Length: 343
Ligand SMILES: Cc1ncc(C[n+]2csc(CCOP(=O)(O)OP(=O)(O)O)c2C)c(N)n1
Ligand SMILES: [Mg+2]
Image (cartoon, rainbow, N blue to C red; front, side):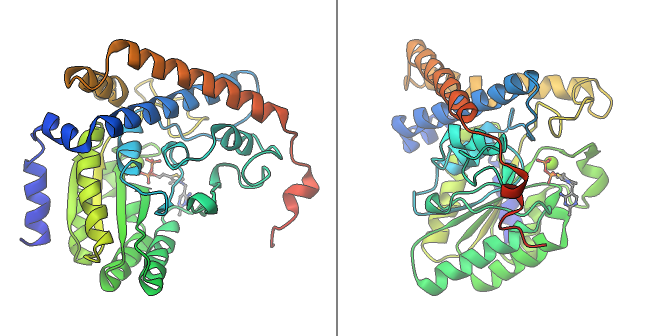
């Protein structure tokens, strides 16, 4: 099958047997995905709560995209790499980063991952979460480079590289997927297509109907998944990850999803209909991935209502602890912020 046929085939296969896929993933992992999605949601809520108290945090909310991020992150082994992007926190908590230290970092405190110097561009090399530059798309070539390094070192790691639909329009993205295609590097490129880049609609900036078609340009398989269905995301991304690990090369997965909140914390027109139609928003809000996965777990007999409630309570308690930890640090001084900066 050619890449184009593959993209179309996957597009048509969206009506899949979800229960069979959930059973293949297994109860434990499905429940773990739900737990991580709730943790990410409550982390997001905690940030909103803290900001009301007057503490400034730069946040590109994950709300609505937890299924896309956690569905993909849950396919990785501990030794795999994640090349994150600006949106959300699924890649932090989903890769094992500590909520308190992430929060402290976002609050510019000395008990954060980078002593408050990196802010939302944080990483943790021990957990193989790579930091990222603030330039959209500029991290994608780094992911291809990490993939090449894995090949040269002959280890069996895989890189999950994440970016949005907007970043897939940058030159960096094309160059990077092309190089990964040439090298047959073990990189899975996950593009979260949330229909917008800041206030601009997808169609106004992107020539192709589906980002996954860009896989053609790099001779790799392209997949389209429903990003609000973590079971589907996991099913498809794990196939791509397995293939990359076997040495079969990279893949491009387009995850169709939607952000519930504004582009970032300061977006005051997120839900007033200025740039997103109210009907469109409501339709996506109804497809909220968090309660949807909860319902799937109940329907498939993988969890009971009490289990879901306990998971939620645990997440709330974890985020309260995270806040306490973050608040116990002190703000970085100006001198500390400038140390190790090269200007
Ligand atoms: C090269 C570059 N141009 C512009 C920006 C400003 N910027 C930050 S996020 C963003 C939109 C990104 O959209 P998308 O990739 O779709 O991700 P989303 O925010 O929708 O998750 C832009 C234009 C930037 N950081 N880098
Ligand atoms: Mg976008």
